Amino acid sequence: MASTVEEPAPRRGSGRGWLAVLMAGALLGGAVGLLGLRPRTDGPSAGEAGAPAVAPRDLPARLPARLDPPPALADLPAGRAVGPAAFLYDVQPPDAAGEAARPMRQRDIHLVTRSGEQFRVGRTPAELGPVNQSLSPDGRWLAVRRGGQWWIRDLTDTTERAVPTGYALWRWSTDSGAVVLAELSQSSRAFSVLSMRDGTLRRLDVAATPLTDVVTLVDGRHLVLVDLTPVAPGATAPPELAVTVRDLATGATRTVPVLRPGQLGPGESFNAIVPLLYGGGTPARVWLQVGRRDLQPTDLPEGAPAIPATALIGVAVPAGEPAGRIDLALLGSGVAEGYEGTVGADIVLTRWAKGRTELVAVEPGSDSRRVLTTLPQATRVLVPGGQW
Image (cartoon, rainbow, N blue to C red):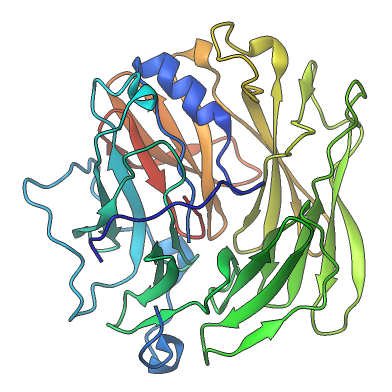
């Protein structure tokens, strides 16, 4: 599993917000790269092996107060189970600023298990672009794209399976029992669901255009979709945004507002070209990143699609009840925060400060934060359920 991961063209709606790049670069004096993710199939379905269930909220439970790269990093062993993953990470070198203009030095991608062990699961690419790796929400499944093929490894076992040729790994079900796959073309987009329990592939009867994206799949049943058709040039973005929830068992659909009138703060808006929507968690929620254009740094490259983030606004799915607001630390406060994912009931943020990176958990409805672990400066993290 130590092969260099490959990268397809970036896809709409799959990237992390530009805020992480902008603020970390300004704060740490270097560019923090933006990466994105995706799986082999010879062997039995790992879901049939009867591995113990993993409680998402327990994933970071045994992490040390500070986690550093080990002096010697072993490859992920093919012949033994290592246990569920807590997260993936890689560390930017101190002098990484400006690497986008030349071949970048490749760095080890570390997998950290719930017990604190670390293994190499690939290398970052030599050119700027998305890295193709993903973790299931329970940390059990590691998906990697190599040789033009997606492969999914069961970390609680040794089995590995291939995603069928022609499919891209897209979104995990919140219960980790299935994963949404996509078939992409210039004129259409089709989605299927691959069961992690028995390996069956089910094509979904969902009318989709290249501007239709899956935000999340709730417990293998409720597919949450968003229409990414951009606002016409010169038009004002509406102060609201909604997703469509489709019940895969009955075919029923309903519209669920994510952003309602009156929820934006003074000067806030969202990126109407590609709204930064994130989904997942238990209970399942969808979060919209909002920000303020007046906080945008003046030295960004021309055309950079960045609205510095100020908050996440959430809604429970499929119920549609508001899930609250999480305010993010702004650069002027001496730190900067960016969304990483939803693990169990908690929102996980990366907090960049001088000399360190902190992984922080926030419980929706509470402004309190707890530090899960501290990592080296300019560390990039992927938590369960996320994609690079």
